[in-house]
Structure formats: structure tokens, C-alpha cells
Length: 357
Ligand code: DOR
Ligand code: ZN
Image (cartoon, rainbow, N blue to C red; front, side, top):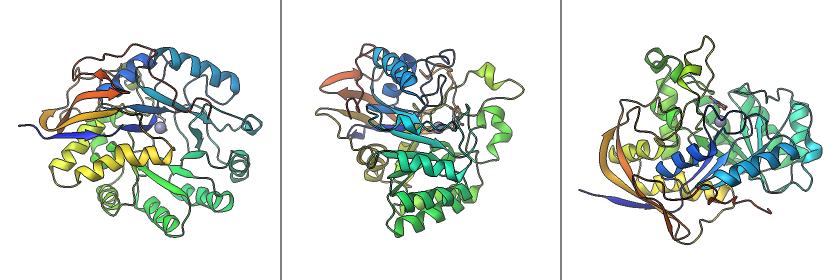
């Protein structure tokens, strides 16, 4: 049986593709191929991979590297640095937005001081998105800046009842905010860390069952705008170290996990399309090009297994989970770029969706 769903240009606005100095974890070729296999038209890459994307020079390095390798369309974030790099913001083009880390994460980008956060907010060009990593009470601190500077702000990987409450109030007050949640915060809890060990470690960490339930309620009420993978590949060897890095791959499991939610009656197909395609495109001012879509078979059930994935580290925190939904075809600008088994696009054929913007 087949139950084919056409997704209009799925866009994952939160991925860490690696490459450059972290090419041993993953490369722009491997992870943009994983994006196509996961059903995505485009991905937006985070700035915390060394050399961190916090200067014009590092930005040009990254644009050139992804430009030569990407098989799907893409964008890159500029990063806010604790060594005030706001002088770089004026006239900055070719980026999809600014990423500001307000709580600790992988890499060295962290802005803990409200006065410095304010300087970044004031300097960032009006109208361009600021994506923030903010957890717990930090959400309220960032919302104060949104109120003051009115910059459109995307709250990444929201994972708790408390954070949802702050943001529900912010939306009710008309602030220009959007909300992303990840599949791992929707399907796993802190209890899973016992079995997953370091493969269940990421920032923000997994939360309680009540938090998970609240995220699903927030999706149902239309509060959540985006399901984003926070795809963050680390090798199994790194994850086995005494102090393992935080982060999990997710590009190839997000759509099948949402397909499972549709199958289980927790989500409608229309909600799924909004969460992975139309909402993220709207937030970043994008329209998928003509003849850009993904054919997704909602009735193909299978178990996620190690070895069945293209992401270079090859593992998933969802191994053993039964999901619904197989990516049959991905089309970009009238060209079939994934046929359900093979990536058909050549490295470098993906374009920067924010070139000149
Ligand atoms: O778990 C995480 N890993 N959270 C982040 O914010 C960064 C990411 C990474 O780059 O590994
Ligand atoms: Zn992230």
C-alpha cells in the first residue's frame, strides 16, 4: 500500500554540517547527501564548527567550502561572538541569519552577559532573523531583548514547559518570535539516557515525560512553528570518550518520526507540512523554487538501524524505533536529486539561498 505525501521544499533551519576543521566528524558532501536522503530541499548551517563563522574571513572560507560540496540547497548563519564582533554586521550579506548561543554548547560560542547580548541585538540588521540557543530563564532574558529591539527571533530547540510558557505569553503579546522543537525532545526523555549513554547526550539535554507531553500539546495548539533536527554529528569514538561531546545526528530520521506521528494520529499531514516546509520557509523569507518537492511514502514502516544512514558517523539515537515514512524522491528545480536510494546531484550543485541577500 502507498500513501504518498508531497512535501513542498522541506527545509531544516538547524543543522551542524561540520566540514572544515571538523571534517573527521562529517563533511559538507556527506551531510548534504544525508539531507537529501532525509527528504530535505535545503538546510541552514550553524556557525560553531571551527573556524567559527564569526568573521568575514571565516564566512568566506565556509561559503567557498559548502559552495563546492553541497548537493542540496543551503544557507549559513553568522555567529555572535563573546569578543564583540558586531562591527562585522553592517553590510553583511550571504547569510541566513545570526546565531546567538546564550547557554553552553559544543564549541566556544557563549554569550552569558545580558549587556553584550543587547549589543548584538542592536547591531544586527533589522529584518534578518536571530536564532537563539536559550534554555530555561534565559528564554525570558532574550525575550526582553526582542521586546526592546524587535528583531525577528527564532527560539531553537525549545524543550520544557517553562520555556513554552514564556513563549506562549510572548506570542500573545505580539512579539516577533518563532519556536523550533527537535525530534529527540519529542520522542526521548531523560530516562533514555540510561540506555543510550553518551548517544543520548545533547544540548539542551533530554527532559521529563511531562515536558515531552507539553511539546506535543504545543504542536497541537499551533504554538510550535518548526520541527528542526539540530543535526550534530560526532563520531562513535568521540562519543565513547571520557567526556563525550554533546549532539546527535537527525537529518535522516526527522521526517520518518513525524510520519510515525501522522500514522499514530498525533499529527495531521497538513501540520507536518507546516512544521517542516512552509513555516521554516516563511520564517526565513524563502520560497521553494518551481518543481522543488519531496515525495514521501507515509505507509512504509521500518525500524531505524545503524548502517542504514548516510550521515558520516552512521549512528542514530533512534536506533530500534519503528517509524512510518520513506523518502521516495527529492526534486530541486525540476531535477530529481534523490531517487529513494541514490543521490543523483553532483557536489557543488546546491546553491546558497541567501546569496546577495
Ligand atoms: O548538542 C548539541 N550539539 N547542541 C548544540 O547546541 C551544538 C551541537 C554541536 O554542534 O555538536
Ligand atoms: Zn544546534
